[in-house]
Length: 348
Image 1 (spheres, rainbow, N blue to C red):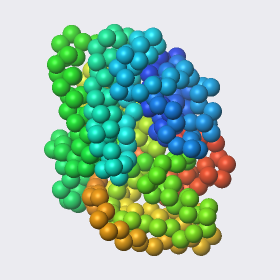
Image 2 (cartoon, one colour):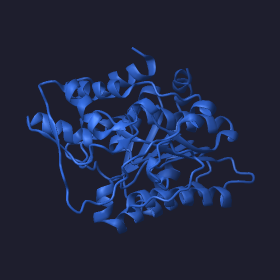
Image 3 (cartoon, one colour):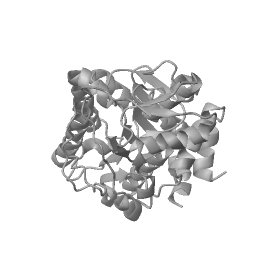
Image 4 (cartoon, rainbow, N blue to C red):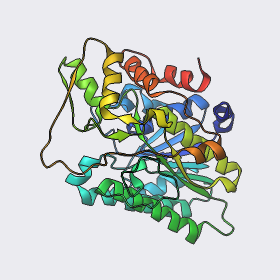
């Protein structure tokens, strides 16, 4: 299995993460710590109260720098000082509905933030591998029944999705303009689906909402129960990002854009996901559809074709959606982040 070689590769590697205080970032820090990496994180303070970053005592495990991705000078200093070999860019405004409320800030963070990271890379010669994490929503959504491939048209509709499409184009432009001939830096973008996992306290996400309602013993409210999404456990895509960064570090031929999405059988409706959660949580939980007037546009059908990642990188999803939800419930009931990382990568 490709996952077994990651620990040996990342042991002692200097890795720079943007957005390390967020949900994905915290899980990624803990994976890299498990592998024995030297980690520097650059991000705003944790975005939620409570936060997984604080619960998992993540700041004690790495060199953690609080800074805004839009502040180029601060970002450059942090990157050059840490002299990383690998950079993974996670920092973003990640919520679709929030992007409708604050479109300017969303574009500034997600587009110019990416520009700043790429500019910093130009001035940090130690970096050999860069992965820009975007989203499954970068594609022009045509509401078709099959998964989007990496060659499909990029054109997100809402401010969040569009800003991530722009981030993809910015990365492509910098790669072709500055990192082609004679450059030692390898650059790729990674697109993943809707992730779930323990410790996600963000608003307007279905599993955190389910947990809040479950703890309050209330009826779960679901806005879009018939929308199809590529739900997966957060460890699945993080495994993909790390594998991609390793593969292109070792061989420039692996550069490119990759989808890290679940198998087709695990692309389910939001209502089905809530049903799985209710069964896993227990206690006769129920849910109802909320008819929201003048709701902002969100795609009703979205799937990713993951065949490229499987065939070229040797990446395969490990946990079914039922197992993924079960792991969220287990975390809520006391299973540690370290234990779940061991279960995922070592099968223990």
